[in-house]
Image 1 (tube, one colour):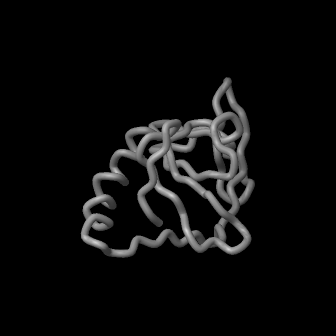
Image 2 (tube, one colour):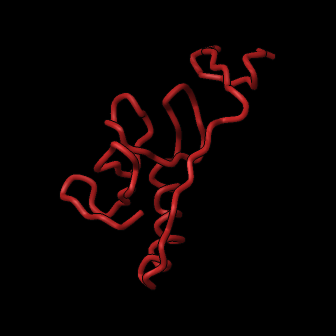
Image 3 (tube, helix red, strand yellow):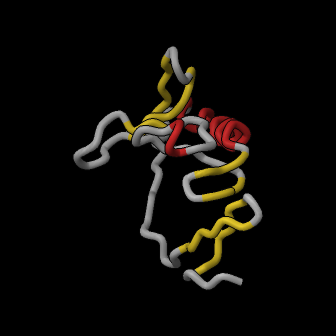
Amino acid sequence: MRRRCSEHFGWHFELLEVPSRALILMHPANNAQKELKGCLAPVTEITGQGEGFGSKESFNKLKVLLYPVMNQGEDVWLRIEECIESIYWRRENGLWRNYPSGKAA
């Protein structure tokens, strides 16, 4: 990962060395379908399928943790692994709820 600045997102992160991909960014976004086009966004809480809460706060925490490390010339890597347990989403009373392994409570 590296720091990157653009007019649209300001300072954010760019993921590097991803096979067959380029310009994968990490920036704040609470709604993946509306705000992301192949990018990643941290959130404090997942509120639905592709939706979250507190992305700006989560992103700012990452910057506070990672920028000093990057400024010292250290490499920062993001490791994404396959999810071991699937999550089932169901809308209840206007809110998305998730249940492990597709078992609704």
